[in-house]
Image 1: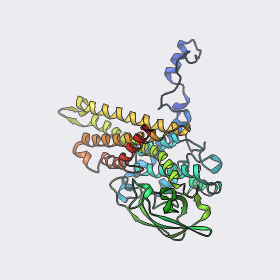
Image 2: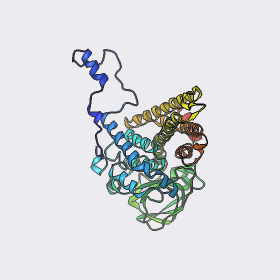
Image 3: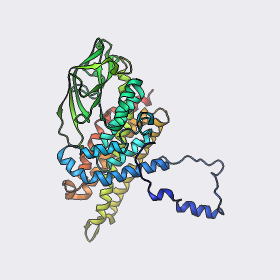
Image 4: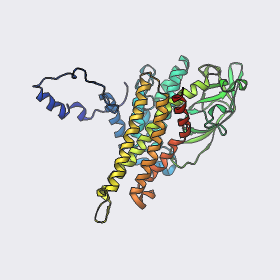
Length: 418
C-alpha cells in the first residue's frame, strides 16, 4: 500500500510478554490451544495498520495541533495541511494503487479520521468526505472512464464534495428539487444545494438531481460536476457553531451543463447510489466522534491531575474518578462499534444497521464526554484558552449530518423489523 509512513521502533521488537512466554516454553513457539478461539479483539490492528495509525497520529500532533487555533479563528483550513494530506496518501486511502491511490481499507480510513479528529475535527471531515462519500462512491458506481479520469487526481491533488442536501430536502433527502434535463450530448442541471462540506475548496462535486419527477425518487440521478462547468457556482459559506475551519457551502446550478459521460451509474439509480454511500459515510462520522471524544477526554485526564481543590488534585476525588471511568467505558464501546462496522464493510458483509448504530452511539458519547470535559475544567473549560470548549462545539454536528440521530434510529428500527 502506498502511504508515506515511518516505522516506530517499538513495532520491530517482540513484546516483553511474548519473550517471557517463549522462555517458559523452552524457547519454542506454541500455536493456539486446540479448540480455543483465535479471533483477535476488534481493536487489535495489524502491523501495517498500527504503523499507519502511528504516522497519522504523529502528523496530527506535529503539523495539525500547532495550527488549530489559527484555523479556528480564520474559519478556514490551512492550505499547507491540505497539501500534506495528499502527500501522505490520506486523500485516496481506498483508491486502488493502479489508479494512484493507496489501496487501503475502510478500517484505515476510520483510523485516519479518528486520529485527526482527536486534534481537529475540521481537518478530519475534509479527509472523511473525500474518502467515504466521493472516492468510495466513484469506485463502486462510476464508469471505468470516469474512474480513470478522476480517481488518480482525487488521490493526488483534487478535492471532492458530495452534494445531496437542499434547502427543503434534509432528512427527506429524496424530496430534492434539483432538476436534470437531457439536451443532446449533455445534461442541464437547475437548482440549489445546501450544507455541502468541502464546498469552498472542492474541484469536483458528486451532485444528485431528479431526471424524471413523474417517477418520484426513482428519477434521482448522480453526476460528476467540475467546478469550472458552465452554470455552476459556489454560493454562501455558512458561519457555524463547530468544525468552523471546515467549509460548508451553498451550490448554485443555473443551467449547469454536464457532459453525458459524467453520469454516474444509470439514470434513475441515484437514490441507491446516495443511500448506500451514506451508509459508508456514517462509519466515518462515527470515527470522527470517537476522535473528538478521545481528544476531550485526554485533555481532561491531564487537567484533573494538575488542578487542586481542597488541598489535593481533583483526580483524587472518587466522584471525578467515576465520571472519568464512565466516559472511558462509553468511548471504548463506541470505538468497538465503529471498528466493527468498518471491518464488516471491508469484508463485504451487510453493515447498514451496524453503521447506523455506530454513528448514533458515537455521536451521543461525544456529546456526553465533551460536556463532562468542559465541566471538569470548570470556568476555564468555558473559555477559548483551553481546548475542551472546541471539542464540545465540534461534537454537536455528529447528531446532525449524514443522517440525524432520529434518522439513524429509523434505519435501525427498519432493519430490526424486516
